[in-house]
Length: 612
Image: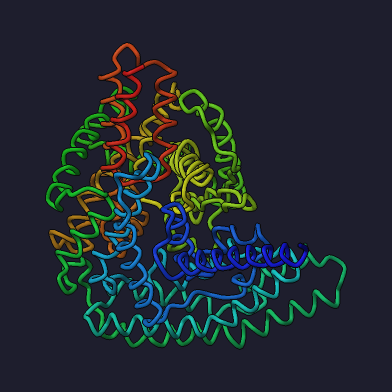
């Protein structure tokens, strides 16, 4: 009997092992039986192909897996080709699942992922139309940001992984040059000013005395914090860092500098993507991806002109009420004058910068509390305010947000650019804190990452029109929260920011569709916004290297405002503070979605609300 029982047990174990093996084979090499498993497989396939993405997400570390933290991404053309094949295969597999048999949650997830994958497949013919090295988000500077702000040095292994990653920089930059050469063969060369900007930036970084290099300074602070009094160990790591900077990092930058010195001789002053192969089709594609609509470039341009005229009128009314609109002066000219007045400026020194950071922190705290009036569910992730790293200040935008990690180990960060305090008039600060912080980017992105019972990709995937649209919508929502009550200057700063985003519609399409030279775009933006020319130059140059992206803000904001109006009109008397909270919670609970899916989800929410 015992022998028979053992045989039965052995047989059952064999069947279980065979079933597990078949399950793994199906999961890894074929389309999974379960749609939910497919979602995770698609996400993991993308994440595992990028060690830097894995580090940024902070998921694997929760399970003790850290091997990826010693490696940088593979930028080779061969890897790029494999990635494209995987994307096509993922789309094919996703569309093989019968959507009629899916739950409502699955149908939503499928539609979001399908929209994204189709866009990636459609864009494969334009895969080399971008500029991987540029003055805004280029690899040459983002790599430094990643090492300093994202890579965690919390123990000895983290420090060693930091050094191992730096040792891989020559390999990554060689692959980057391979990518740049492939683009040049297709006639894709950055405009001359882009190359000049990145050469200045890279030479400043490469030429810095090694112990004072930002990577070494950061590394030194971290090892002092984790090693403490173990002087021998700390000295070994510090010396290793100096050696790696001298033998790997600086030579890698010299190689990249040499490449761009050569490419500078072949660059032109044509800034728009119309100059690229099939450039008009490429720009239409970029607008589609960035706005998640099918608006034509001309329609976007016309929308911008209309919004510029409307906002100009509102600004004129406020300035007249404050007796600050002089005879023959436009609102933009009045703002250009006011922004130079000492009452609206901090001292352009360390004291002024410290005061501005303190005020930003106070604003964020106030806004977080007031957001409870119109939003029911707030994020768990905290938010910090920091100065943009000094090595990035010259080419960075006025402010930006860095998302928190999924594991909660890193907060969201609102970075404020304080390179020149004359560029930071006080009446603009509240709107920046709303947009980048709360209830803007931090509220939306942190809540998206904290979603429960959704595929992991929905926590990480971002659609610009939704994300930037929400942040701009939040600026408008701040009026309802009373953030500008009794502060006409702050409200004027808000309108100037909205004018800025409306002008973007005109300028982005002007550069890439109507073939405006950069100088014309700069002149138009200065004329309509009253912003300092230096700030406008940085912005216009951003649009050159990020075609279509600047259009996502205003298009997304208008879509959210339209969705809210539909809810108010259809709910009628049922639209009350509770309904408003529920509306915002519904919108934020979506995570990030294309605008056409946002509209469908809001309409379904309205119908469900009316049915009860």
